[in-house]
Image (tube, rainbow, N blue to C red; front, side, top):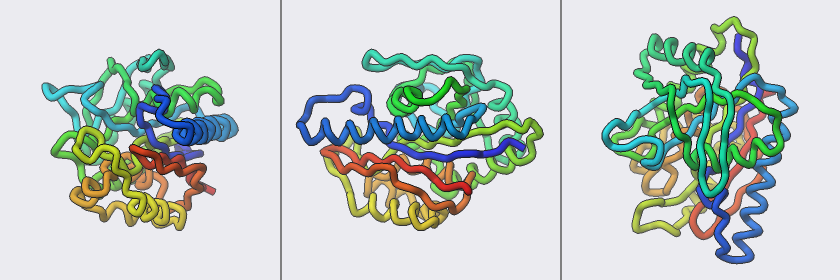
Length: 269
């Protein structure tokens, strides 16, 4: 059995890397986000995983409209990406990724795959800071379409997470993995509402997570997710499907001028 030994969720806004000098308040908020992500790295190091499975989305950066996948897993040997002077190079885990790919197809999920993938900010922004404080570990990027219509439903994402758990439970490799979901919370990139943050919706989501009722987020429809800027919760909901209703510790929540930053650790004990 592949053991899920840790599960974390975090925002992935590009400002985490670009660090714009908007105000002293925003600089202080970003510093808290950076510290929270490095704390995730420290906690991951203590868990000693063999791989990180990272659920992320895309903003027409790694993919384009000529060939845009709903769900895709990276099966290559090396993970790499670059943004704002920051580079990420890490080993992939093709053996684990291919097991997930083939087994999830058998589970009824039409998973795409790529052996060559240039990662952008949904992965680079959080992982740049997380990997500052963790040992070298293999990465399995796992794309969940959250931005380009049509998109998988929240329920479908939750069922995908449950299927991932079944696949890992059946495996006999005795490896240890940590799951990370990136994206959110409330923000409205690429829309006339950019700069709006629905803190009430964020608090609703956080309450579900902290109280160990994350599975209820799978009942949210696309209209609610879009209206409240929570469309990237699809990655978080996928992770929740894999771990079940485990209570979350919110390491930080920062309502800023453009997004509700959140970093969470789920108690799997």
